[in-house]
Length: 387
Image 1 (cartoon, rainbow, N blue to C red):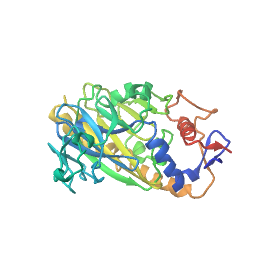
Image 2 (tube, one colour; image 1 turned 135 degrees about the vertical axis):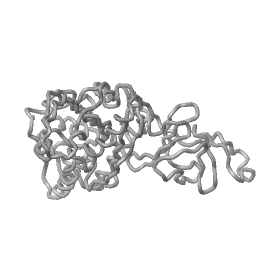
Image 3 (cartoon, helix red, strand yellow; image 1 turned 180 degrees about the vertical axis):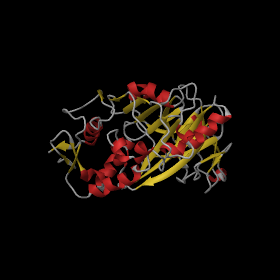
Image 4 (cartoon, helix red, strand yellow; image 1 turned 120 degrees about the vertical axis):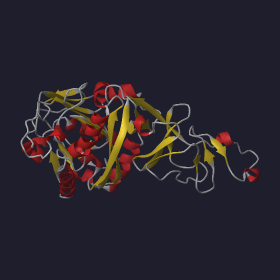
């Protein structure tokens, strides 16, 4: 059977057609989003109390992340096992019981069917225990809950590999976080465009690097065996350029953690970052081949005093949100990349590229070459042959 896409023979090129084709997108849902991958869906700080829940999405599947009365956080499909009705529509909430609005079937936070009106007229072999909420396999690291649709996915620690300690650095070293807010945005681009961001563009695209005298310090970039990317930099002190009326918004004030920029970009899509005092997890999912929704979740640490917590709130979206000082221009470029994808041909990676890359490797923090590791893994999962 011929390959759905003929991949360019050049090791540093990817075909732009994969960024907008509907048939490619449908295959991605099957093989990647519902395949042998882990996807971050919530942090425990988003569902801190028993009965708290959050609606999340992986691929095009709505999920319900629920904090059980036994302390465990479980992930269910957001669908009643009776007729398939979506159970919850709000982004987050609290409920001692989960009730379907259609026929009032009621479930515990642990997913067990508690009651079903009219059950005296059900078939004689009907049993409540046969109709629990569909629970998916999940695991957590530093309080961040991941889900997978496949029983064959490696355990989470093995999947994350060498990037796990950096996830910990971002999440306060111990995961003891408190949710302080969200921003939500829809980018007019393919999910792979969104997750293909790299360090090469930073000082070239983002005006804030120049206006605020932001400088990149000593750091490293590496790719793991599973194509997760880690970029970690110690930030030098920033001199006040006079551009901001209140310079304190870009100061580092956490006495326990030095000023640093650490970004983890997971395969297939899932990003988290700590920049100065911002603790940020980005939950993303595709809406179509050409639209991607991203939820920016911001956190404080449970040990923060009131002043540091207020500083994190003010710094969060102002710094690295979808309209932040550092990241303002990204959305516009994502869309330009998407429009350009329709011109045909291939996109070429050159910065830091010295030869074919596959598997774990270390690069300069400003290279785009590491993204080729991700494209190799993507191509193999999708079974696209080289031309």
